[in-house]
Length: 51
Image (spheres, one colour):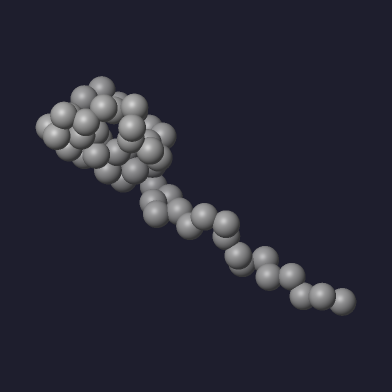
């Protein structure tokens, strides 16, 4: 029999807490607005709150 490693994760999660993720996403959005970047170019933002 072959051994299967059950502990491998395809993509590590940075933050499991959705509140922390929301705060970090908001900071990225504010930074992009200040730099004049298009918000459609931001990747990985899942939770959007009013800015």
